[in-house]
Length: 454
Ligand SMILES: Cc1cc2nc3c(=O)[nH]c(=O)nc-3n(C[C@H](O)[C@H](O)[C@H](O)COP(=O)(O)OP(=O)(O)OC[C@H]3O[C@@H](n4cnc5c(N)ncnc54)[C@H](O)[C@@H]3O)c2cc1C
Image (cartoon, rainbow, N blue to C red; front, side, top):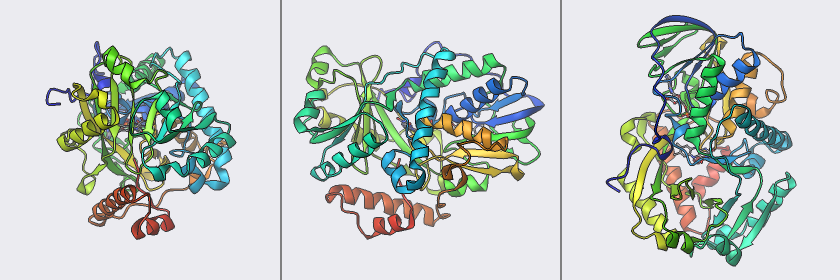
């Protein structure tokens, strides 16, 4: 593991486009976007396509796709609410509308990939949500019924049926969801959106961190942007407004990628249909095959650093990498001793309701879209579209949603924030170890509508 590259697998591609020049001087624009992840890039593409005469500037601190968008698992889910179950709990009255919006967003995303000629290794092999503990079997049928009620193709698999799909001695049963989910190469998606934005005439400045944002201007080390409207798409990174700091906690999640499997190893795993897989604990893993035939295995640890700290130094964590390796080889004993080519981490923009949240900032000139909590690959396109609607003051089926108008409960300020998150992580681990029973701390948070997830 020592030799594994710290560069996210998806970004370790050649040739990479040369970075765009940093902002140099003072410029004006109709719309400025801060952040070149999926949210910012979709906002740029959608806004420019809608009104080509609009002058649009995108400022990215590093290079487009460098943040969570280029370092995730590439699991695509139509859900805008971090899954149907979370949506049913938090937005029961508008779940029909949210599911319809999620379905339309996924269809539009696929249409856009074709129209923009973005080859991002899109696949729809289905998702296996596997139970590895007896108590996790209890709600498989209920989840399948909920998925079917919303028109998704899903079925419950028993122990033998799931092991016939993928041969792991840890599997006891699963939900197999065949529609509304997919897999993508997120690095290729980010670079494709960047290319499309440039081709449409968006001015992208990379290595241009916005250091201060006021109602008058966005300032970078090399210049400033004055814009009528601003989208803040900064994910889990240092917030430019107090509102985002209150609502979002950056939580580090880690990922390994193995060398390509030998024919013998692949044969031992089965996995002929190449489904994405996630297990059902509070602390869960997600894993999939990579386009070159390795296994991407991530999740479980969710590390919060005091004071919302984010830093490249936190993207490597030996203890988390070792734990993931141990869990990978417990899941697939045939992979014992396999080499790891890439090991990295990235911050997830966790909020207490687990799905995107919007608000106004910078004296009303800006709208932020943050808080996807680990399920933003597809939802970020909806986040971008809705942020643009809100900025334009447009009444749409999206802006009417409670999801767009309400905000999650904030996390407390430090030092309570750190203490609350640590206590919750421990309580979630305890629940996993004790048959899923939620202790008094988790029950209190449930009553308050507060949660912690990745
Ligand atoms: C390890 C990991 C695994 C994940 N797995 C999945 C998954 O499988 N499926 C899924 O749906 N979701 C997953 N997610 C979540 C998903 O990646 C995100 O929800 C999504 O990419 C969010 O995109 P974004 O554009 O909002 O944020 P980001 O991609 O983080 O983009 C924010 C950008 O803003 C830039 N920025 C920040 N501050 C400034 C500033 N002041 N000035 C200029 N630029 C700035 C950053 O450099 C960054 O590029 C995962 C996340 C992580 C970290």
